[in-house]
Length: 294
Ligand code: GH3
Ligand code: MG
Ligand code: MG
Ligand code: MG
Image (cartoon, rainbow, N blue to C red; front, side):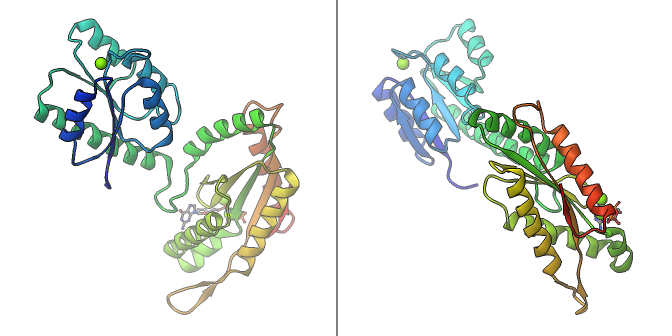
């Protein structure tokens, strides 16, 4: 699980001291005002925030609102810790996305237990997100995640005035591989292709398993010509690759690829570009396989 980092925000130094002491088993960072807290949350990797409400300049509610409206900090759980005990304050805290609410003077063991519970929930949430976004066999992003994130990447491309391209690829005559060597070897072929795809990607590229033996790579800041180059390199790499089976047999396979560029300023999502890549992939299959079309 690794060491967890907790950000404590309170304008009263004495309160900070008590909390830092109490949470000694964790890595603790403290902040005496909202501005500093927001900056730290944005720059450091924070697992949980303990947030005072009554602070000069920016109060805890405002800090929480800003945390929740920032993509980078919106998932950090916030436990309010405050002298405000009225119902309306509590309701408001939860309404704006607070995870828990503890009143001062707090009971140390209770607060520690709530902190532990929140960190545990956060851990489970991360696990769930990973499960929901990846394909267990290849560890690549699944189609659902790909569709979500592609929208986000298209918006960045628009904003930064950058090109955006797609490569769709499919293993050639994969049914033959399954029929000849069995499903399990077929799985190994899919996994080894997935590994090649991730090894050859740039950090910003999104590689996803789109279907059974079909993959899509989204290439930010990449023109059609450049994407064709990427696709051709991949095709060659796989063409030259040999998989050594346990029985010393050697297995070779090829892929066909379709490339398209997203019309960043004319298309609302990547659907049309996916269709063009799919059509190009079909052409690659029809014209003999083991080739790149666009
Ligand atoms: P083509 O060159 O036209 O693509 O021929 P193909 O035989 O590869 O045809 P197609 O793409 O339609 O076939 C895909 C096959 O992949 C069918 C399915 O049984 C198999 N398949 C899909 N997912 C998996 C998987 O996870 N593991 C294995 N072993 N096989 C899979
Ligand atoms: Mg205060
Ligand atoms: Mg195929
Ligand atoms: Mg297929």
